[in-house]
Image 1: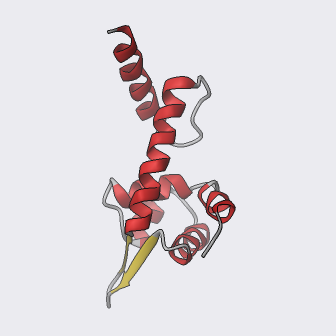
Image 2: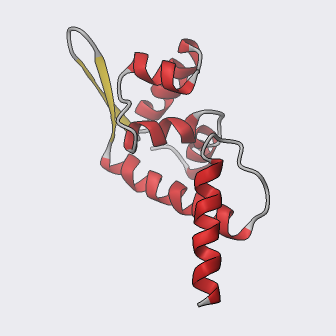
Image 3: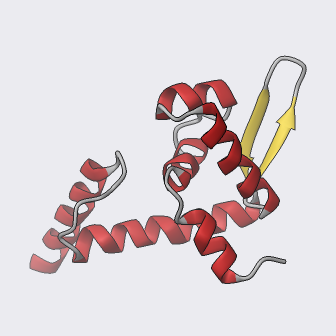
Length: 118
C-alpha cells in the first residue's frame, strides 16, 4: 500500500488533476478522447494513467475497440479531497491556477465571498 507521500507525488504531477477532472466530470474516459481534449502527449497520458491505476485511483476496462478509464471508489474519494482543495484555493488564495479550470476557481471564490457578505 502506498504511503501518503507517494499519492501526493503522483497527484501533484502536471496533468494529473486535470486528468481526474476529465475522467470524473467531463465523461472523457477513452485514451484518444483524453489525449485530444487535454492536448497531452500520449506518452505522458499513458504514464499518468498507469500510475493512477497502480495506486488504485482509476481502473481500466479493455474492450476490443477501446480502453475506458473510470475513477474507483478510492479515486472518487481522492477527487473529492482535491476538489475541496481547489475550492479552498479559489476562496482564500489570490494565486492563479496552473490548470485550465481557472474560471471555475474564480466562480467559486465569488460564491464564497457572497456567502461571507450575507
